[in-house]
Image (cartoon, rainbow, N blue to C red):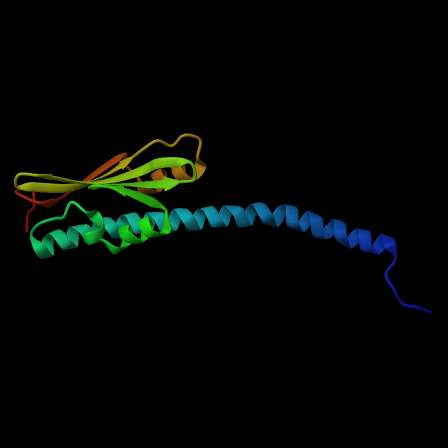
Length: 148
C-alpha cells in the first residue's frame, strides 16, 4: 500500500496556511511601520541633542544642520529628510513636510525649532507627530536665554 496525501488533505493544509498568512501579514506591516516611527523619532531627538551639544561646545551654531548632527545627516542620506538651507523637512511616504527642523539665528540668540507639518492622510506621519508631542518645540541654543 502506498503512503501519500489525499487531495483533500493537501487542500486543507493550503487553506490553513492561507488563514495564518492573512493574520500574520498585517501584523508584520504594522511592526515595520512602528519600527520606522521609532527610528525617525530617535533620529529627530538625537539630532536636537547633538545640535545643542555642538552649540554648547562651540559657542555658536551653523546654518547647515548636517555639520552639527550625524543623526540628521543620516536621515538626509537615507532619503527620510530633505535639507534646504537651515531647514530640514522629514518626509514620510507622500508627505514632504511631516516634521520640520529649523535653525533660527539672530543677533545674540539662536535656537532650533521642531514643528509639525502637514499630515494629510498618512497614518505613519500622524503617529510620528503624536510620538514627538507638542506641535512646536523651540530649543534655545545660544544667547541670553541660556542659563549655565
